[in-house]
Length: 249
Image (cartoon, rainbow, N blue to C red; front, side):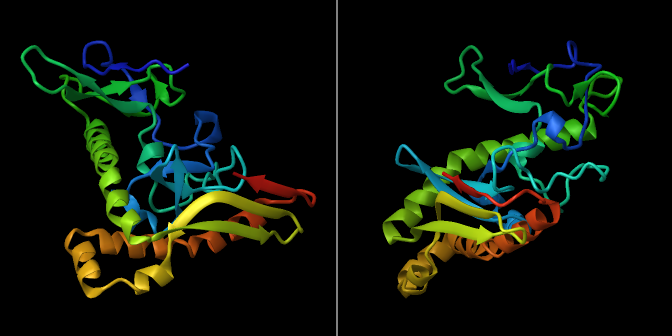
């Protein structure tokens, strides 16, 4: 049971966080949320797909093809992660941004919380959060920056979809393939950028997307789709299961 508390250098002076990834730490997730601000980096490693819940679109990175499967985890590596960049929603580990309203403030202030019971949290090993004199460690400063970027990404993601949905740029995509051992997969419920519709946009529509920085993000998502084959190759190397059919919604 996660129980996040406000992080402070009095109660948490001795806390450390293990900056590595493992199924034992809960990193065995096949799909994680991502934000458009990450697309340019994530496109190099992961398929970026869109999903819809209660009529609202959101972005994801595909890390595996079955529940609890993360094909980027590798216990033989010091970091436990076999890629050059990690989605921020996983990298944040035991941290999250909470909100605290000070007396007289019109809006609540974002503050850093931590789950002391998280398996990456320790008092004996890992990166310290605070310096001996009480200031932030370099690791904690990095996590604060990451959480701020996550917060901004969460705030701005609706604007991304509000701009592209009216242009008809989202289309459903069914991902079907067979592994070398004959095992078959079909992934449902995903959306991607419609390249044909993208090519039909008028000059003014393209200019508007480019001026707001969205056009590069659309091309990043399109480019990321080539990573599906890379992910299949990872699965082939790791899989020796008997033939079966899996349908993922």
